[in-house]
Structure formats: structure tokens, C-alpha cells
Amino acid sequence: MAVIGIVLLAAIVFVPQFWVRSIIAHHGKDRPDFPGTGGELARHLLDELDLSHVKVETTELGDHYDSEAKAVRLLPAHHDGRSVSAVAIAAHEVSHALQDGRGEKMLALRHRLAVLAITTDKIASVILIGAPILAALLRTPAAFLACLGLGVGMLAIRAIVHLVTLPVEFDASFGKALPILRRGKYLNERDMPAARHVLRAAAFTYLAGALISLFNLARWIRVLR
Image (cartoon, rainbow, N blue to C red; front, side, top):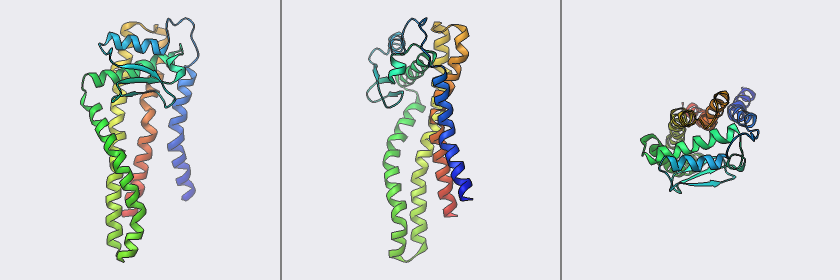
């Protein structure tokens, strides 16, 4: 059973990540026929959407939109590259800026929960590590179970963050980025299926995190039972 659990966890962690990376790499070949880079497209789209105050920057920490700094950040390959992946990912991250600019509730909820989860994750770790010590000192199983229950409850916030993130990501990819690319004719029709694949991969970026959170939560709930 332990071996099966390890294999299952490895699949949960690595398969979605491998799939996302392979899709983005497959469509990441430079296209000299494209008129601009991903970074240039992001800047153009932000200006077109009246989001000129949002910066476009390079990063080594993964493509993302920083709602506090008001910045779309792209990996160098996507900021400076001319590929379907660069174009699609730039449009995806700009779509998060658009969600923020419109004050969309799901993005705001995700941000608030993510900030809260940073704190609750730390507290949960301390509680779960300290539960056996507390139980030994108090000499009662009830204290151990109470600590576990509190720790699991706090871990649930991280799982909720990931679950809230998924619809936000799908909206950015298919509710906004894909229509923007099609409407503006930033890609020709023969490239749109590839862009759709990349946008699907971008939306699923957080799937591994969501699955890991749910797996950990289920494991601790099983301990409580």
C-alpha cells in the first residue's frame, strides 16, 4: 500500500507538470513570421485595454500577474520570444490584469485567500508537528485529535485557494485570452488550435497544486478517522 501511495503521489505531482511543460515547449518554437514578441504583445494589449499603468517585466519565477505590483511578468522565452506559446501566455497573463482592472470578485477572493493561506500554512505546520508532543505532555488522545483537527482545518484553506484558482485560470484562458487573440487576429486561424492547447495548459498550471492539497487533506482526514 505504501508503494502504491508513493506512485500515486508522484503521478499527482509530476504528470500535470510534465504535460503543461511539454505543451508549452512543443509550441514554443520561434516564428519569424510573427510581427512581435510576447512582451510586445502584452504591452500592446494592456494599452488597448486601458491598462497602461500595468508594467510588463521579465522574471525567472514563472509567468504570472502580480496584482500588488500591477505587473505582468513573463519568462524570458515568452517575453522575448516570437512563438505561439509566447503569444498565448502573454494574452493569458494580460487577462489576469484585466480581471484585476475590472475588480472581478473571484480574482480578489483568490488573492485574499492566498494571503491568508501563507499564514495558516505556517500555523498548521507548527500545530501538526507539535501535536504528538502536546498529547504526550497532557497524556490524553483528545488533545492530539484536537490539534490534528485544527491543523487540518487550516490546511483546508490552501486547498480552497487552489479550487478557487482553477475557474479564475479558465476564465483568463478561454473567457478572455482566446477571444482577444481571435478578435484582434493576433494569430491566424491555423495557429488558433495550438494557442488553445497552450491556453489550456496555462489554465491547468495550478492543477498539480490543487491535487496535492486535496491529497494531503484527505490523508490527514483519514488519520483523524
